[in-house]
Image 1 (cartoon, rainbow, N blue to C red):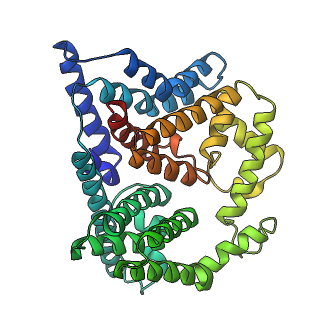
Image 2: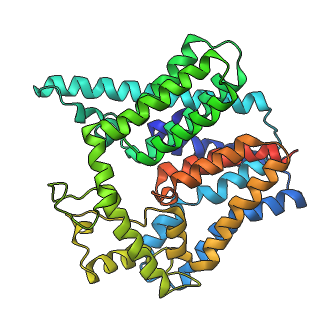
Length: 389
């Protein structure tokens, strides 16, 4: 399952269906266990999703409601399957799952870059570095958005930093290649949030490895990132957007940059939420209300072509669709499960939730298949260790 995630959406969905069939067979043979403790944790994992389903009664766009609520059903099914099936994953097995996922992300990046190079040669175009960045790279052999792939690469990179800096005394060449390869992939994809978090991860790791040779590699990674972020022509323009986001002619393009667009989107998300504070507008109407706000307040940068912009923030998206009640249920889930895992020394889960939450400040990962399936799968298998502790 983990290996197929970067190669989606069809493969991981099929693999999840296979796992679901495996669970149903166990259910038919009476091998599924559901204790009071498991039920309590299931509640925290699924309460916010179950509350989303209540919005059926006040959503007007029922077709959109059905589409999104089914897509997000992984958030309910994954913990139900993983928590009740009578098997316990050992720490070494969990690490292998993440390791294979990491290798898969790395291979996906290599194959995508190779495919893009071949397409460039066949088309007769000259070399253009932009063809190997962002969506040009992530969509070379599949249909995954570059921000979703950036999230995958970030979590994989964090795992490799742990494995190389904090765990292994001897560093194999392959692991070092994985470490630098994932870092290079993050740079090519160009997600500022993921790059910023990767720098923080390396800085923290270097504190624990300052006296080791690997510590020098850490600082090399940090300084090379800083150089790319502040002195590279392409990324310089992205930082300009933060300072001068109201001037859509600054970039010289009709399609305005990401930072300024997000600020306008967040403004509309707050406006929509103010009018539906407690229950939100409902899963069915969340996108329609945001788009209406863009039109009413003449946010023309968000109305380019057939583009449809969600809230670009997992917390604001929850606020828009399910109000303060839904948002508090979602935050309670993150806080309670992270604290419970921390007290039982399941740091993998805590770090995973932290990275997902921070990455989600600029992207609504829980309304897209790649984000929902990734979070549903890894959050549950990582938490299973806590559940049995």
